[in-house]
Length: 255
Image (cartoon, rainbow, N blue to C red; front, side, top):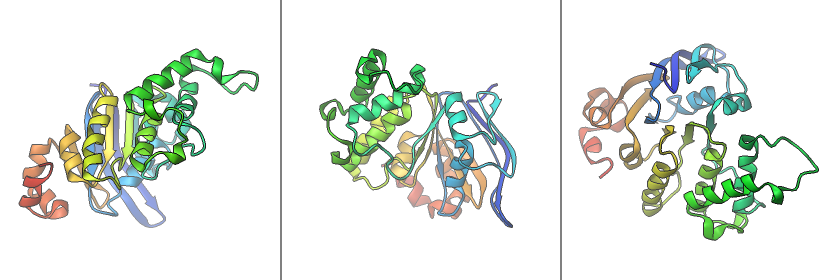
């Protein structure tokens, strides 16, 4: 089987400090996987390795069967993987529509050309309008990103992440800082816009994890100690001890 994303014996050290200590992970196409673990477990480092912000000390990372370990982020992006970040990362002074139009240009093979007028790029404009509708921001089309609410800015960043048409999406704590109502709405948005795509998300909110993921990978001290369905993770004594605290925490997560 060719996996959407396959990680083998991945290690990352900073000097003598080992952060990632031999992670193996295989994610099927179209699967939604949540990565959880205590602070300092190596989750963000793992995301940085997969997305090319860091190079591994050793090991292999494959995207749709082709190696990507050691590649630059833009090269990995062009191979079909896009990532969002913990901190909202949008063009503050551009409108929601203009943000998304910028995000579509590369996927439609528009390189840098100073003589082209963006208003004339009908395919880019149409694609941006479609994404605006998908993320529920059509009514905020012409509002500058800096004037959107926090939840709307996060939705816009999700839109930018999917704008290039990549089939593997990495979301880093997408619901951080949201209220319960905003979080519930956002789970539905993520489900909708990643339909048919492969999703990896780092998330601390257990209601999001158990409400969204097909499988959950638990990372502790740079190693995956469990990778299974939400039901199996709830029942795993190692997970209860290492991260989730108690069987009660697992039984109530997501309810």
